Amino acid sequence: MPHRSFRTRFLAIMAFVALAVSCGGGTGTGDLDKIQVTMSQFEVSVTNTSGKALMEVVAEIEPAGPASHFTARIPRLENGEKRSLAHTSFTDRDYVPFSARVTKASRVTVTAKDIDGKSYQVQVPFKM
Image 1: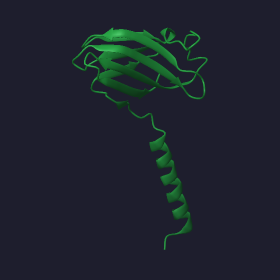
Image 2: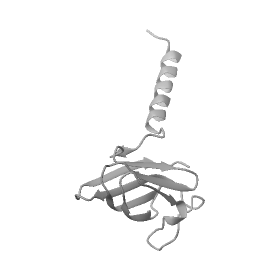
Image 3: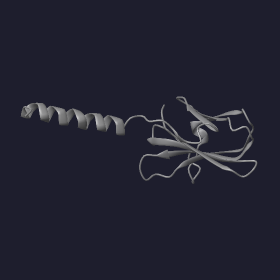
Image 4: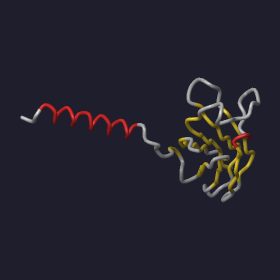
């Protein structure tokens, strides 16, 4: 029978590992092969790799908490085209621009439809 302190240490380490795995930065989800989203300190870049033109592209910064979402719209994004959106081009429903100093963001969601009407969605964690 293992020593009591060994069991306590083992359980503490396993709890820490489980917490680290669940809270890790994570990767994006959704149609990552069709839409690529990259972030820098001042902008969010959206690249169309779907093979078709995308219509009604909506990029959305989702805050951590009950605040309203900040959106930016791109009417059309051609195949292979990359569009960079400054953080200040994202606005909430009252047209207040996004500021990382005021709002803590949790993730970026990009939704779009191709010219055939098929919908795509990508979610990536917000990183600065």
